[in-house]
Image 1 (cartoon, rainbow, N blue to C red):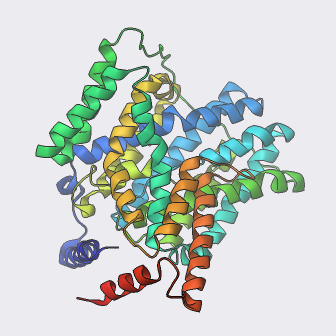
Image 2: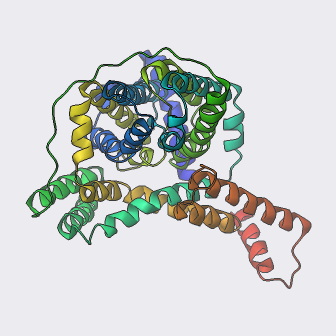
Image 3: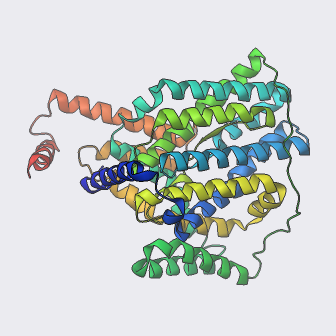
Length: 436
C-alpha cells in the first residue's frame, strides 16, 4: 500500500472514530451519491446476466422443478443482498457478496448424482465449513501474508477478460463500444465520479438504435421460496459439500479479500467469511448453495468510479444489496430482464466500469521491482482462465505467484553472485528504497 493510501486510510479511521464518538456513524444520506448507486446497479446487472446462467444450468442438471429453481434463485439473490447491505453498513466498506459461480459450476457435474434433499444437506454442511474457517481466522492470516504485488496481479488478471471483452465487442456492436468509451474518456476529464454513469447511458442509447440488437421479451412473475428438509449422507457431503466449500473459499473468498485489500481497505476476514458462511447455512433449505465475497463484480463498486472518497464507497455496497433484494423478491421478472440483456451491452458496461480499477491494479502489479516477477506470474496465470481440478485461475495464479515469490526470495537470501544479471539492479533497488 502506498503512503498516500495509508494516509487516506488512517484519516478515514480517525474520522470514523471521531464521528462515532461525537454521536454515531456517518449518515448514509449524507454519503450517498449517484455514482455509488449506479456502481451497485451495474454490479447486480453483471452478476445476474452471466453467473446466474450457471446456477440455472446446475438446476437443470439436478432435474429441479420450476418452483425449486425459482427458490434457488430467490435464496441466491436474497442472501447476496442481505450480506451486501448489512456488512457494508456495519463495516463502512463496500463489501460486495454474490452467489458462488464456481460452486454452481461444480454442481453442474455433480448435482444429478444425488437426491435434492441430500444436496440441500450438503449445502448446509458446506456453509458450516466456511463459517468455521472464518471463525478461526486462519484464512485471513494467510491472506495478510501475501505480497501486495501478487494481490494486485491477481485482481488485474481477474479483470483482464472484462477489459478485453470491451474491445472484443467491437466485432458485433461497434457503435455502443465507441460511444461508451468516448463518453467515458470525455466525462472523466471533467467529472470522474460520473464518467461510468454517462458511459452506461451512452451504451444503452447506442444499443437501442443498432439494428438487430434486441432484448428478449420478459414475463412478469413473482418468486416464493420453497422449503426443502435437508438429508445428510456421506457420499453427498464428500461429493458436494467439500468441493463446494473448497472452490468457494479458493476461487471467490480469496480474490474477494484481495480486491478489498488492493483498493486500500483492511477487511475483517473473520467477520466477512463467518457471516457469508452462516448466511449460506441459513438459506440452504431454501435452495441457496453458497454466498461468498465477490471478486470480479466487487471491483466495480470498490474503485474510484464508485466514489473518489473511499469512506463513501460503502454506499455502493448498500445499493448493491438493495438491487439484489429487489431481484430476489421480483424473481423471474427482473432475473429474466437481466438475462435478456444483449451480451454485447453487458460486455460494454462491465468493461467500461472496470477500466479504472484495472489500470490501477496493473500499475500496482509492476510497481515493486523485486516482486515484479512473482506478480507478473500471478497476473498471467489468472488472466489465462485456466481451471484445474475444479479450481479457477485466480486461485492458481495466487498459488504460482506465491511459489515464484518464495523461490526468488530464497535465492536472494542465499545471495546472488555479482556477475549474474540483476545483481546490481537488486542492490540498486534496495538502496533506493532506503534512501529518503
